[in-house]
Image 1 (tube, one colour):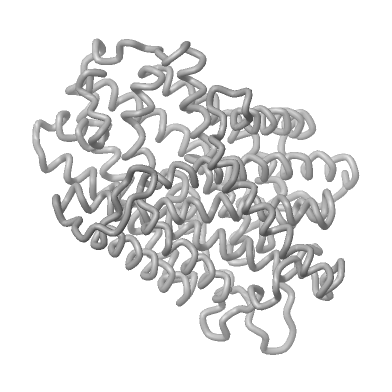
Image 2: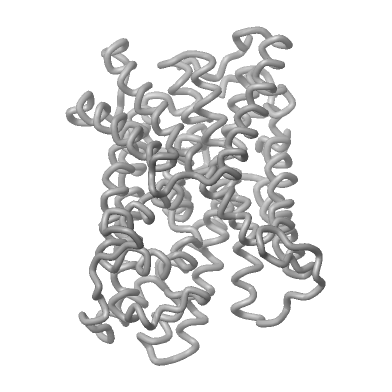
Amino acid sequence: MTTSGDSPRFVRVLASKDVLALAFGAMIGWGWIVMTGNWIVSAGSLGAVTAFLLGGVAIVLVGLTYAELAAAMPQAGGEHVYSYRGLGHMASFICTWAIVLGYMTVVSFEAVALPTVVENIVPGYSVGYLWTVAGWEVEATWALVGVVGSLLMMWVNYIGIRTAALLQKLVTLLIVAVGLLFLTGALFSGESGNLTPFFTGESSVAGGIMSVLVMVPFMFVGFDVIPQAAEEIDMPHRDIGRLLVFSVLLAVFWYAAIIFFTAYVLSPQGIDLDALAVPDAMAAAFSSAWAGKLMVLAGIAGIITSWNAFYIGGSRAIYALAKADMLPRAFAKLHPRYNTPTNAILLIGIVTSLAPLLGRSAMVWLVNAGGLGIVLAYLFVAASFLVLRYREPHMDRPFVVPAGKLVGIVAFVLSIALIMLYMPTSPSALAPVEWAIFGAWMLGGAAMYGWARVRYGLHAPDSSVQT
């Protein structure tokens, strides 16, 4: 960030281990604890793995475009910086506003996941009926746990990146340790017969795979947190790109392994969709209830890593938009002591603290709408990558993607393919309420963008997108 005098500025304190924990922890989160059983039942054991491998290839290729751009333009804002330079003012806003929707929905999801997982540790704690949303009865104590968790996470991010990074490393290590323990136990206790049927689907095998594939972008969102926090990373620019790609590959392996070994331990008949399949598989692998509880604790750690990372990513994306005069300038304020975009953090905290009041069923709407925002941003980044490869071939690129133009074209096409999964013609199309959420978000952003254009003009006086 360009500053003068004693103005607050981002501080470069994130080392390679911090960055890896930030991205990997963001991508694995809590979803694998909740959704693995559904994925296996929907697509079959190998069908679910196939969906994540196919989706993983697309995400790796998109990640490569991010890696080159992040190393070349290591500034806060990530997608905003690349799309501004490659595609211009309005495209930059659409791209960044779309990814902010994705970040917001992830943070909201975690605010609902926390009280859900607490039920597995303290059964029956949920009391005090409030109302029903989408068939889900919202209880006061249940919602309170989510709201308090959200406010605590907001406070962690408010007081500085160092605290957030330390928390991220500790809880990511816990997840990895428990995950490796599970894979070891499953390897010796599972049975190959449990893997059948390998492929299945409500209407067809392809439909089953697609029903899982549509969730993949949401599950892998998180590697792009690295570019968002680029101004706070203290490592060679080339290594930023390498670490980003490695984190994506690591997440692909994690999801595929968790799905496969859960199916290896539990037969389809043994998967209870009203329970948590991975903790059930862990308990079965070690023939002990304590093992299942340990996996639930790893799930809580996953909630924290994802929650934490997307506070970082979302607040920096909002900061970048405000810094470029695409949102009110108040969101570009950095705290004089903590060097964090405090108003952006407060905005995320206040908005997402309302999520538990909607209950768990409504989160599906937010997740699916946010997934479309994520893949839309991927499309803009891939397009920016290609434009800059052709228009600025001599740009300083510390990390260069081999066969870059081909990779960019494939990433662009795959991003379109991912977007098509959400369209009305797809078996996994968004529901009308999900389209309404996405549309309302984009229209609200358009209104603020229009206001900022009138108020501040087309270009920011101190643009953060110059290299």
